[in-house]
Each structure stands twice: as structure tokens, then as C-alpha cells.
Image 1 (cartoon, each protein chain N blue to C red):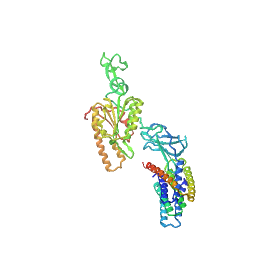
Image 2: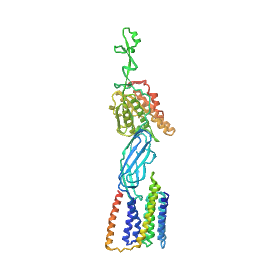
Image 3: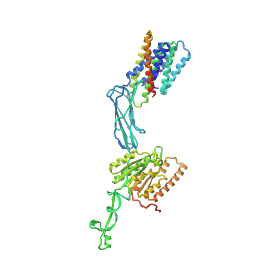
Image 4: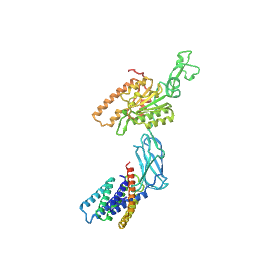
Length: 167
Length: 430
């Protein structure tokens, strides 16, 4: 599981690094401090095995990335931060789960295959993000209505899932 | 919070933010999140269709025997990339070797085998349901089921049975079948019983020539005591208030082993033996003979646990109708100061009463630090116990004060294998 642990740490550090790089050109120090705090919280949570804290740190990272986009910073850096952070979050969770179980068949192989799958997913996500940033679509009324309907239908599904999860 | 709702909330938050702020670049941030959810959906588990079978190398064994458990789970559905199989061994039973859970991959039609060894103490143990959880590696989609496996689900660990010497009992009433207990009736036997006038059917070998010589013209014959089997009612006192438990050691366990040894001995001699566990409830094993009865009694003893009940707090609610009149009752109990009244009452009803009393004072004293206070308390408790014993002794109750550090076999050999010197009526004062 050495590879998985390394990639998890790299995902956290590089995700925070990509975020900082995205904010780099003309950002106030408070953003760097916030990014640093999130990275520290995440690393500490990863070290201590606090699942809830890693999820919190991931949410904060996505929120910072979204803020960065809204403030006009380069969206590709922000997408990279979210992608790498997501890798750290998903892989960290899996490694913790494997470590917590007393009897796992081929734990190293499982962790390795999931790492490779996530890295492939990262590559696809970054390519898609780069492609999406180059494409410009005219939002017609019909397309807007379609997207809105999809959004509402999806939201109702999310609420249903959340209700089931809370029972 | 579960991972899927968190991921969905983030993705929808970004989408909503993008729509609200009219900023399409925000949507880009949702791409990796949606891809991760899609991968989870792609590699996630299908509906579970599994079956399980559990095998024990023994379903009945002596306490402390290692039991090997084999659980086989077969997947009849689609491929399960990460499936966690968790068996539920009985609570409090230590696992000696192996694991009770396994994370593995199960293709369609494949089986996973889980093996472990448990070492339960005395008791009757039920295995729980097997839990099967399939999940994608991102922890987003999960399917879980619990199933009752085919095969064994219960394990009985019988108490250790000590082999003891024949216990000498003399109930006032015996049954009609030949056995080993002197029946207080003349007839064929071994032990001399008396002399009576010769009758034509008597064997000439039993003529008492000395007595006949003193009375010319009359022949006398020796008569022997008939030996028969008897009804023996074993009572194990399972009241929590008489039990002493400290540091994992329990006086009750000694009582259980002693009762098992007594049952074995009495049944071996051909007697009709019943058992009553008197504690939280009345657990009664009706009297019987032979190896089947031995098994019934041992299983009842395996289940025995000390318990509290307001009704059965005192021995006076002990149902005497379970035991035939004038039969032998053997009570295994540490005894309390409330108990003698009822035991004297039993004697008055004609029961022959033998009390095996594991000594709680010496047992507890050994588990406590040797301080002057403990020594003083032990002395007082010993005096109280001696008075209680004297009272019962005077009522004709046969008593054995058993220091549990002494092996029960030795106690039986020294105190129970002989005919007691006294058979006094109730109320006789020395």
C-alpha cells in the first residue's frame, strides 16, 4: 500500500499546491493562509485517521477552488486542485478502510489498482476540464430549460439519497 | 456523512453556483466529482445474491476445546469487486486463530472461505447472521445483506466432568430395580442385614449355624440388605446473591463442575437422576436414567448462569414436588443464613439431604489482599458459617464444606465415599 499512501499524500499536497498556484498572480495573503490551513488540517486528519476531518478539508478545498474561479483566477488550476484533492480524498478513504480491516485479501493489489484507476480518472478529468474551458456554447432558451429540468430532477434524487442516508 | 451524498452535494453546489453566478467555469470543477461518481456506479456492486454455509468441526465439546469454524460464502450474482464477509461468532467468545471477517473479490459463482478457531468456555452459544457488504472502492455505493447460513448455528460446550468414586447415599425410599444403594430391606444382597427363621426356599449356604446351634430344632438364616437404585434430585443453586465473582473467577463454576461430577456418578450407578437449576428461573431436567439423561443434564449445566430473581431469592420457593417423597436430594450451594429453615423443612418432609457447599469465605479471601480487616471479616464470616452448619448438622443434614482449592475428587473420596456415622432424626441434640 506504499504507492497508495504516497499518491494520497501527493494528492493532498499537490492539490493544495495547485490551488495556491491558481491564486498566485495577485492574491491576498489571507488566501494562502486559508489554503495552508486546509492542507495542514487534511494532513493532520490523514495522519490521525479522522475520516470526517479529511472530508471537511476536501469540502473546504472545493469551496476555495470555487471562490478562486469566482474571483477570476485560472479555472484550470482550480480544476486541477479539485481533481488532485479528490484523488487524495478517495484514495485516503480506501487506504484507511483497508488498514482498519483485519483480514484483506491482496490489500496491496487492491490499493494499487484503485490508485491507477484514480490516476486515469484524474487524467480524463483534466483533459475534459481543459476541453470544456475551450468550448463555448450558446445557451438557448430550450437548452436552458432542459438543463434546469435536469438540475431539478437530479436535485430531487440527491435529496432522496440524503433522506435515505439519514434514516 | 456518507461519501456519495457529500460528493453529490458538492457537484450540485457547484452547478447551482454556476447557474446562480452565470459562470460556466464553475461547472468545470464539478467534472472530476461527476467522473468519480460515474466510476463508482460503473464498478459498484450489483444487487447481492449470495448464500452462506457454516461448518463447525464439533457442535458439542467440553469447555475450553478449540472449535474450528469454516464459513463458505458463494456469490450467485454478478461480480463483486470489494465484498466484506463478516461472521458473527458468539459474543464474548475468544477467537484463537484466524479472522472472523474477510475483504475479498467474488466473481459470479465464486466462493470465499473464512476459517477461524474459537475457544469458548462452558455454555450454549448461538452464532449470529453473516453480514455481507459490497462496496465500490471509492466508498460511494454500498449494498449490504445479512443472511442466516446453512449448517451449524449453535455450539454447546459442556462442563468438565470429573470422575469421582461412588458416593454413598441412603435415601429412605428406593426404587424396585437392583442397584448399589442399601434399601433397608432384607433380601438378596452383599451387606449383612439380620437373622431370621429358615424357610424352605432359602439357600442352605446362608444358614447361620451359630444361631441355629443355640436353638436346637430350629434353623436360622442370614439375611442380606437389598441394594437398589434410587431417585436422586440434584439442585444447583444459581442465585446471584450466593455467587462470588472476582477477577474472572467465579464460585458458581465450581458448583457446576461438582454437579456434573455428581450426576455422572449417580447415573453411572444406575440411579434415576433429575436436575433443578434454581436461580433466575427454574430450569428443570426431569429425572431419567442412562447416557441420554447424562447428556440432558450436561446440556442444562452448560446453559446454567447465575441470575437474580425476586421470586427465587430464597430457597423457600423451591418446588419439592419435583422430587419423589423420601428420595435423595443433593444441593450444591454456598448457602446463606436464610437457607437452613427450608433445608430443615425438607428433612422433616422425609427427604435425605446432602449439601455440598463450596466455601465462599475462603474463595473470596484468597482473591483479596491480606489485610487485618480482611482477616477479621473472614473470621466473622467463618464463625457465621460454622453456626449455620451446626444448625443443619443437628437437623440431620449431611454437609460437605468444600474449600474449592481442594480437588472435588478428593472431597468425594474423603467425605462422601463412606457411610455417614449419623442418621439422626430432626431436632436431636448432641
